[in-house]
Length: 272
Image (cartoon, rainbow, N blue to C red; front, side, top):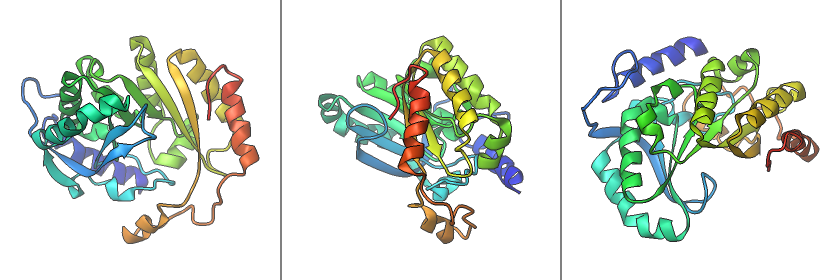
């Protein structure tokens, strides 16, 4: 069922303004609106400095540990104009620059609305703001080289490092994310790698070793954030009428978290 749901949501995303039915870009056609879940004018964990964080709605993945399942369906977000986002962003721009921050677009999955996101990033760069994209990379093929020029940093969430585990976690394939990571490497784009550590699901040390080696080979990974699993979003699953499969899963032990961080460090990566 997870795979079928993902495909339906992906089709919905492909019907978004500015996207062809095959997922490609519409040339020379500006996007006036997108669908926004929420905003945070004082984010401190989604990139350097203090950030204006725009959370867009829509996501083709169905991660077992997702703490925002209310962002999955794009059109359940608030329809918002690019002009409105840019105006609000501009009102914070001087502060963001002084705070050595910028704008981060997160989700959901921002690349479900790639044209809308691309326009916001382009406006942010015109203001002289640092830009960060928070993504799973699953829809990385949608990002044009032109759009990449407006992105300073990618917060890349690689959820597992074998196809089997990745599908168990997300209901989707791993390869598109790896392809996007390699493309970012070839373009010299900085990456902050994120890895959610879930006991019994993403705690296979041999897989983590493989991910660490892959990340080191990319040559553009500035840091790795090993994020201990938590259940703070469990109530949202209940509100959405969905079964939360990880209800009996506990947070990882400190010793395990430190062991995983050490694996990344042993490959020459900064991990915290």
